[in-house]
Image 1 (cartoon, rainbow, N blue to C red):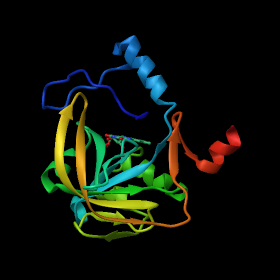
Image 2 (cartoon, protein in one colour):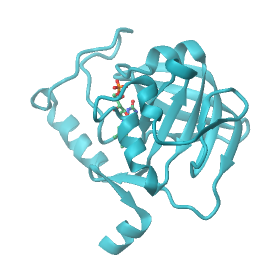
Image 3 (cartoon, rainbow, N blue to C red):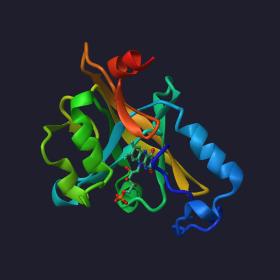
Image 4 (cartoon, protein in one colour):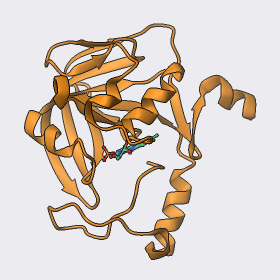
Length: 190
Ligand SMILES: Cc1cc2nc3c(=O)[nH]c(=O)nc-3n(C[C@H](O)[C@H](O)[C@H](O)COP(=O)(O)O)c2cc1C
């Protein structure tokens, strides 16, 4: 995703030090620029309870299979939510709507928000697993963590979906070319 940092190692289990742009190969720089052209839906991964709640903003969510219902999300090995995610083994993916832009920034920690601070200003509920679910999400997937695959700077997380819900007649919040967008905004730019 566009806001990601690149990392130097591919094999160690310990989080690696981020590479500065000047240290990236020409191909990596070209890759990063090309990925900015890939429009993505903005979701937040949520997990934990009370003061132990945490999460992150992500555009790397994609479907793996319908039967069994399984999704994938790529989580940076340096993300503050990583340890709890591996311990709790249950989480929700909440697909955001345009009015959730500030929530997306909170879950990205853009103003230094950590853990439960990221949950302020929104309404929360729970479905099957007990993970926090955004009440007015465009779509929400309540997941058990099925498997993780450590690869390069990220962990590929497979989520087995225990429950899903949607809000009808609502739009997604998108991220494209380094900024938040809406479907109507993108249509107007063409
Ligand atoms: C639009 C957007 C999309 C993002 N997508 C991902 C993603 O798919 N995976 C990921 O690990 N981090 C992603 N991030 C970065 C995380 O949300 C977060 O900023 C980063 O993990 C640092 O969080 P921390 O303070 O909890 O360590 C994204 C950030 C933004 C703003």
